[in-house]
Length: 121
Image 1 (cartoon, helix red, strand yellow):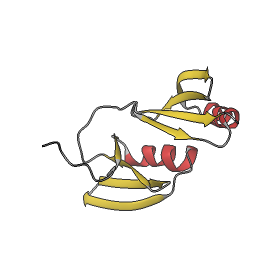
Image 2 (cartoon, rainbow, N blue to C red):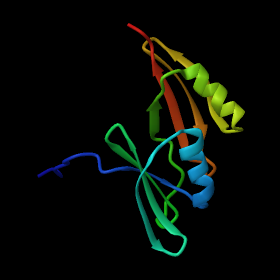
Image 3 (cartoon, rainbow, N blue to C red):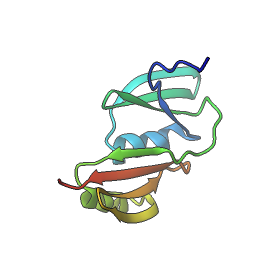
Image 4 (spheres, rainbow, N blue to C red):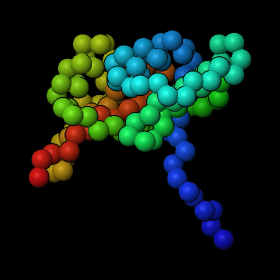
C-alpha cells in the first residue's frame, strides 16, 4: 500500500545564523513571520506563510542547503534589481522560457531560491 499524503507540511531551509537569515527572508523577500518557536536558548524554528504554504527556517534541525523552492513574484525585473541592490548572491541569471522567466538567488547559508514570473497570456 502506498504512503497516503494529505498535504504539504512545509518547505525547510536549514540556517546557521537566525538573525542573518531573518534579515534575508523578512527584509529582502518581505515574508511575514507566522510560527516562531525557540526550542532552547538560541535554537529557533520560524515559519513564513506563503499563500497558505509554510517555508520554515531553523538552526535547530540538521540539513544541507536546498535548491527546491521557487517563488512567484509580481515583477521579475524589479525583483532582480532589489536582489542586486541588497547584495544577494545571484545563483543564476534570468532564464527565458515560453511560459515564464526566472532567476535564482541564495540565502546567506546557500539555500537557493528561484524567483519566477509567468508571462501574460
